Length: 163
Image 1 (cartoon, one colour):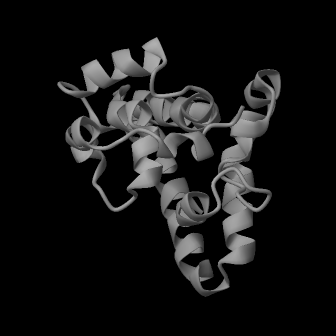
Image 2: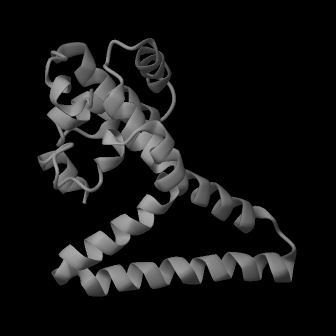
């Protein structure tokens, strides 16, 4: 799905990036369900990967049950907290990984601030701060995007920003 997104960014056949074209209220309302839509879409279109997708889904369900069992038997909140955080991040992906990065230009103060934090913090922030470069240079690892930003021209981003 992500390779399709990079090849067909914000086009009619880019189901991953469609959230960037929605009004914000729709991203908030439908966004949490979008991850399931992506799972079904990839299952429908990726016929040669169906066994892997079924195995991945089964493994996820087993891990959730294991976290609940660990809580039940050891009264440890660690597993439950992990899955709550993972669920919240998954439910909000359309906001922070689609809508915001494709709506804000690299010159936006929020993106520039994220770029400053990305220098010292995490590749997730780099992915947000340098999303336009991630599209223009998809083979460059996310962790190296801050270095690329110092040398690359930022003209490519316009095709990846929904206006």
